[in-house]
Image 1 (tube, one colour):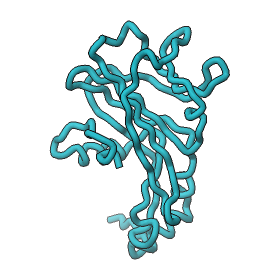
Image 2: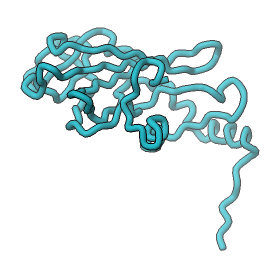
Image 3: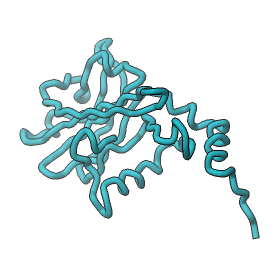
Image 4: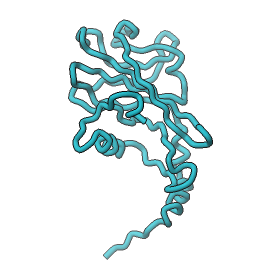
Amino acid sequence: MLKWCGETLFPAKPTGYARFMSLMRRTEVVFLPQNGQLSDATLLLPDMPVSEGVLPVIGQRLGEVDGTAALITDLTRDQLRPTDKLILYTLQQVVEYDRPKVRITRREVAACEMAETPDSLALMGDEFGDETKGWALVHMRKESCLSQTVVTRCTYYQQFTTEEALQVTAKSYGGLTRDVTP
């Protein structure tokens, strides 16, 4: 779904999609059946990658600033150059026609939109309290970006991590195989 919201920010060796899939191995394992209504489902997972690059990683977490929901970073104003860009990815878990899907948008964020906390910068707004959404703030400098993953409170994916989900999925693929020891 990332490719539909704009240029993907993964190295194209051998393809950006291949690199994304490789990085996805670090996320929680989910079980989706081979066929049927859930076969093409997409799920919002914590730590999903949205970019990979060489710039220093920006720490980010969800919290509150002055009683308002916020995406709190460890980025400071003095780390930003006038030509740098900040791109905010917003991912939302939706269910369309009984099928889970993740919808993704991205937009450029001006540094002046970010609130100063005692230690860093934060994006504030009620949207950051939404438990169906996740966010990733990507710092870009010229053609370089950082490696960034999604922070979210969304737990919808957890129903696809259970033993029951594994068994249903295994059955759709013809069952589980047994480990054979020599």
